[in-house]
Image 1 (spheres, one colour):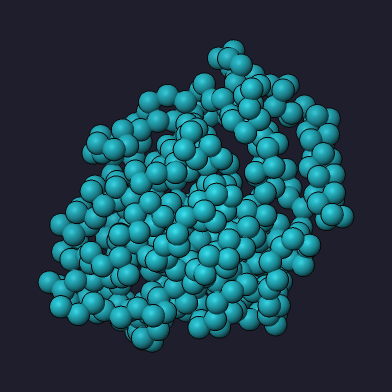
Image 2 (cartoon, one colour):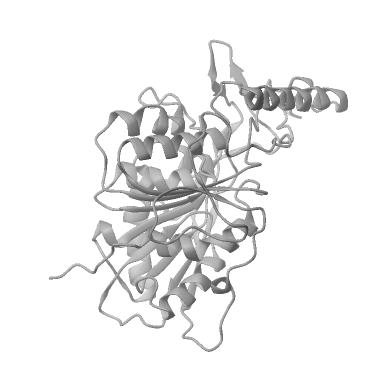
Length: 386
């Protein structure tokens, strides 16, 4: 209770400071003269204690240590986040090849493109504080980057496992895979790192792709990206869902779970940093009115367990009320803590990491933990036999 009061007081202080400097959303309008307000700067999140009442019980690790790759459950990282050796390029091992592409919105039948006007946000729905009204979003073209990592060990004509990542290109992932594959700690796999279509959150192309609670983005990957990868990179990608993984950070993290949740016949393995399991879906949906907050509020608790394996991370200074919505569904730490609770209650195979001295999608934490996370994620995998 004391910690909750501190968080609310911190949020109130940030709002008061914004008023003093004239950046409160109510004090600004767009140059177009609409009722949409300028997007305010994100307030500094408070530091949360992993032992806060109501949070999951977790094992405190020695500073600098990561959880065992065979363990499940909840863990607390210490404040020091040194780069794992596997995140450094090693010249004495086989290096994979990276193919880079630029995709245009005109190439897509699924995502023709939208954007929210720069420096604009939305307004609260007076009838529902859990909804944001956005009137500055409109159709617009985009380009996205696509990078594909093919390990040197890949034999053309054979079927390969793969991992799909959001907000690409992710060169660190490629380096980690070079080292982990060489050490036989993960299977030989292809990595498909897909850039977003631009912007962030409600009204943006990225928000539409990553925050929408549906199978649309997985369909985009399946029907428009994977065939291109196979054709242009000369690879054959597996259809086995146990040999397919998704990963991402922030909304890219919630997107990774959305892909597997709505299409478990396609993906069984999910890795997320600072997953946006909050109320950020736009346009809103009557089926999931609270967006990705629904995962821990209703979907996972009330549905039969799916054949998914999940690795999740959140930082002690992760996002808290970063926009004008005050619906009690915009605390990234609470959201990820709740995810750990419901995953445990339903008997999922999962590992949850609470990182001290860490912000939102903290780069140092990823440099420290990604090799361990990937190795944990692929535990239990065995190639399908014909």
